[in-house]
Image 1 (cartoon, rainbow, N blue to C red):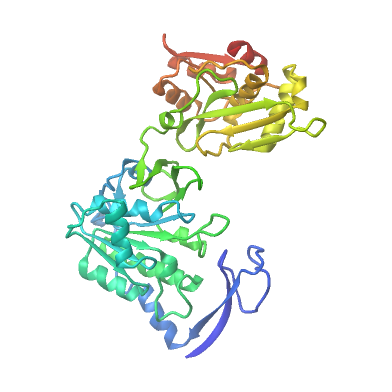
Image 2 (cartoon, rainbow, N blue to C red):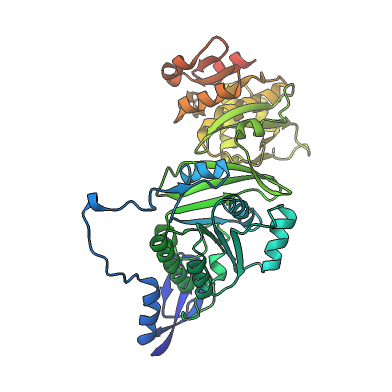
Length: 462
């Protein structure tokens, strides 16, 4: 047995046997970390834990026993079940990532409480002691104090965690987090690339061979990517990200990969004192405090993997310091797109005074709007603020704006219009090119108004 060293990038997992100041895989400076590894008999010992040796043989497709693969259970949280494909699939391996403080542990603690009312749950933590877990779960989250289906363990040793799981045989297992867990037979500290890769392999065997559903919390890098080798996302069944702004109570669970359902789902939550609370009607929640008699305010409908109605605000004013360059500031919207829309309004809609004024745009609720379907709404709120005229509060605007001032169709517009109608708005302004497919949705109390360009939209609104 010989001990050797290698250098592994903590950002992308690239391996090299020579020290360097820059990773040749992702180009990050100062990300290479030295790790030790063994050659010889020690390597066989490690492999025996990660490679299943059940002497299985191939079978015909029609002979496969479905077993626990088709079974599932609810998390007790509708928004999370939605993202997971309708339910938690038994025997699946799920990664949950997100920035520190977004509520990853809080969300899975709530899931544990719900599932433990009828099934066995095992919560293993390498970050919080048993006392800290009890204080958070029972003190702040008001979880049941006398639940015989719920076990917790503080350990950073994967052998101890696996032994407890095989003895207890839970329906659901939570591991918080994979970056704090290690195998004593593997060289390196918990969180190292080799440790994370090895631990995920062992957990995969535990889930698939014994039907234990495992949720694994994983830390993220400064760029928002999963901290560990990229292959982690390929190995597991489902990858979830919990997103949220630091000073906003809104939290979004996005699905990046799902073998048991669509990866185009979005779960919406809000952070409260007792933990994360699901928001089944996010459009109504985001529009709850919208002013109805103020200029520079309008509503757009975007498809952020699910239709969402969002308020957009704009403020046009004279420069704070006369004679200086006008400011273009956007929160939740691309500043480059703001500059383009301002130039189009000035050139195509006779708003020449805009070039000398400060323009501020804000997307309410801490949301980030990237898709072009919000262009029409943002342009109209800028125009509304500039002329100090109010946009009808029962109207929603959908459309992409081109450099010639034309309003272009957007994808999934029928789904967006249905959401506008469901929430209770009376009118939606859409591109002329999409009107034919939307005519069937028009009713006596719901008007669909097509426009060709910005000038036609201005005539409709003002």
